[in-house]
Length: 328
Ligand code: NDP
Ligand code: DGY
Image 1 (cartoon, rainbow, N blue to C red):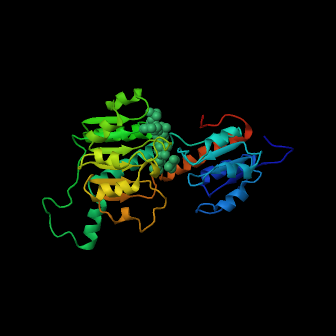
Image 2 (cartoon, helix red, strand yellow):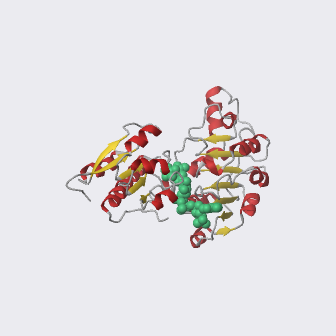
Image 3 (cartoon, rainbow, N blue to C red):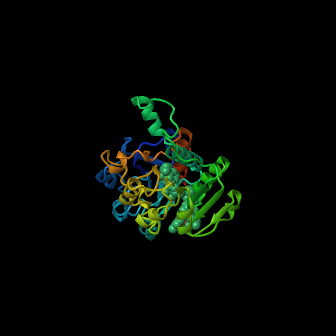
C-alpha cells in the first residue's frame, strides 16, 4: 500500500540472507533501511531506526517492547521476526496497537531437529571430550571403560513440548531403537501416535526418562521449569538436552546437578545469556556440551527463513495474507 506514490518505510535490525533482501528490494513496495552489520543493533540505533517505520524485520535478539513500539509510532503495521520463537516480542503491547506479526514456523523444523539429535548424541557419547583427547595426547590405548557414555537403544526418551520440532526430534530418535517415548505439555497430541508417544505428567517424564529433550516454547509457565526440583527427580544416568530457549533452565541448578552427579550430562544449544560468557562455570564441565544457538543454521534453512520473513513483511505492509502470520 503506497501512500501518494511514496514507498513504505521498513527497518531491518540486521543483514539477512540475500534471498530475503531480494524480495524486499524488488517488490516496489518498500524502502529498506537496515542496521548494516552481522552484529546486533544497539538499542539506541534500534529506537532511532524504527522511527516512522511501517514495517519492522527483527531477530530473536531484539527485544521488541513498548519503548520500541512507541519509538516507531503509529505508522507501524507489521513486525516480522526471522524466527519461530516469539518470546522476544511483547505481544500484549503489539496487540493493543493492532500490529500484525509474522514468524517462521515449519521451515526450520528439520534443521533444528537434526541439530538437536546431533547434540544429544555428542553429549551422550562424549564426542567433544573424545576429539579433545585425540588432540591432546590423552588417547593412550583402547581401554574398556574409557569415554563410555549412554546409548539410545532400549532407552526411554522424554520430550518436553511435542510440537513441530519436538515431534521431528522424536521421529528421528525412534529409529535408534528407543523403547518408550514419553512427552509432556499442556495437551495430548494426536500426532504422537506416529511415534507411540505416551502423554504423561511432567514428574513421570522426568523420573522415568534416560534422555530428556526440551523443545517447548518459552512462556511464563515454562520459564525456569528445569530447576533444582526437576533435576533432583532425574536418574543419575540421564542426559538432559535443551534446544528451546535458555530461560527454560535454571543454569545454577543445572551446574549443581552436573557437578554433584545428580545427572550424567547436559547438551545446550541455548543459554542465558547469549552469548554465554567464556568464564561461565558451565563451560568448565566436561559433561556439559554447549553450542552457540545453531539449531536452524543450515544455509538453505536460513535462506528460506529470510524469504519467508520478507514475504511476511510485504503481506503485512500491503494488508494482504501473510504466509505465516502469528495468531495471538
Ligand atoms: P510449537 O509451537 O510447534 O511447539 C511448542 C511446544 O511447546 C508445544 O508442543 C507446546 O505444547 C509446548 N509447550 C507450551 N507450553 C508448555 C508447557 N507449559 N509445558 C510443556 N510444553 C509446553 O513450536 P516449534 O516446535 O516450532 O518451536 C519450539 C521452540 O523451539 C520455539 O518456540 C523456539 O523457542 C525454539 N527453537 C529453537 C531453535 C534453535 O535454534 N535452538 C530453532 C527453532 C526453534 P502444548 O501445545 O501442549 O502447549
Ligand atoms: C527460532 O527460530 O526461534 C530459533 O531460535 C532460531 O532459528
